[in-house]
Image (cartoon, rainbow, N blue to C red; front, side, top):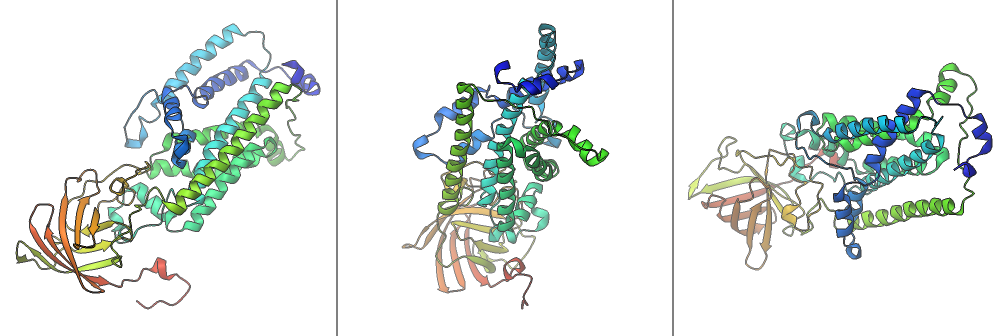
Length: 453
């Protein structure tokens, strides 16, 4: 290895203290376990991908890889989520003890430290690029649906509040994605790592905190990103302390490899080429998904010219007319037709919340559950519309209420009225008259112009 180390730097090298060598050994093992794919599930995913029909989410899942030898569903404060880290720490401690006994003559690990930083930089860059592009093209947090906007704030689960708050401003979400992509490219270049780490602390540090307090569902990954960034930042602490606190000249740490070996030059070129290829491919696939079929939004168009909010003007159950009521468990209060094939009903009937993060990719609309995950206020139904026979076949999208089905016929006496008749989820006959309400929403109307309500 001495042939590729800058000789002038070697002469200036100092011997590491005992605790410094042990700390390095510990973190080297701890990080390598999590960076180098050791989990068979990673390779199973890698070799089962259909590369001829590649979906951006396949690459996204690979970039999020973290070894999981224990699976824990504990939700409270994510106490069980970090159980794998405890195992890695134990393995690292044992490895450190063995390494220290076996290597007593080594004075420092500067060369190994350099390569570990390279691995950490690339690992961070890969995951930041993927998260960056699914925000840059607002896929991760889509714009709230009409039903979402008509859901009471108290019916939101914590993580959905966070997602809706960001999703309501697509340009802001795109900006956040740009920041992550920029941080990834700053890490890609050794000279700009410090700036990239600064962006990560400012942005991803907030994301890690939000994961904990909003129960978003990625506490381990977001914390792992911050830990990797902290590892890179430790390298710069002495000179930043001199510059910003002591206010004395701070010399850059010039330790670097001289790539005189052809093999190392090729390895370096391959690493950079793979990263650039991955970025281009992922960006293209994410853009394609955003423009053709956003994975969280159902793709089947809804009933023509039905999109909107409807007041239930008349509700007849088994030939008995039920007056408007917010407490009756059978009487519908209002109905929303989305732009896609989703119909939602507000009724005083309990909803078992779908607690999933809705990040999975599903081909069928009924399984695309982002619009209802984390909500308790409305009942979401997927429907098939037969525009010849004027019938609607509805099924509850919530996995906890999937057995609920309705079979209705529809009539449209005018542009603002829809009449539904048929059988509800209990097989009772219903007759419902819906009157469209031209409701104005302030987030649509804007804040910088006069609005008449």
